Image 1 (spheres, rainbow, N blue to C red):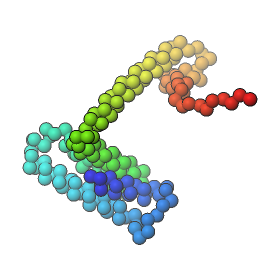
Image 2 (cartoon, rainbow, N blue to C red; image 1 turned 45 degrees about the vertical axis):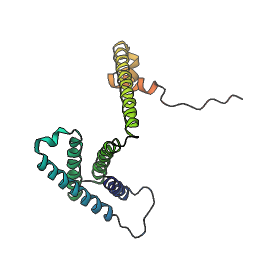
Image 3 (cartoon, one colour; image 1 turned 90 degrees about the horizontal axis):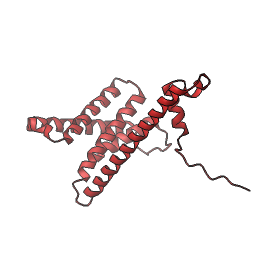
Image 4 (cartoon, rainbow, N blue to C red; image 1 turned 180 degrees about the vertical axis):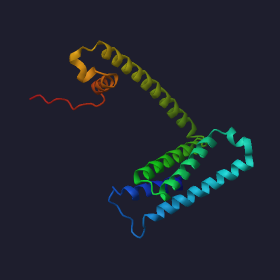
Length: 183
């Protein structure tokens, strides 16, 4: 799994080429063919596991992630050989890397020392998601109220729900500005 993530990320880097770093003696197609062979091996392994376990294959929830990984690998291969676009190939490669990184979380959770840390991170993400839902709810309520109460002069900022939401979001303090220097 880690090899697949590394090969896909190296192939994405060879497509984007924005780091300015070249590896001596390695041409970019090595990363592509390494990712394709590793991905094909993963798909074949999952097919054999699905045939062997039949309906019990779907009892483990991680196999859904494996199935999504296999589909994304097949999409990556199709996008590359159909020469769709470099952006689509990079995007599908990022999806593969994220799914395999998610699968690595399950592997890491088997370690007794790492398991409680992963549970703490999951609980933290749950709290953050609840806060973000509350934030979006309050933002949308105020946007609706300001849209309804806006006069004809305020159409630049509160003329529609989208404009009001964007205006209110831009007013939220998302960055800390440096303190003003007073002389």
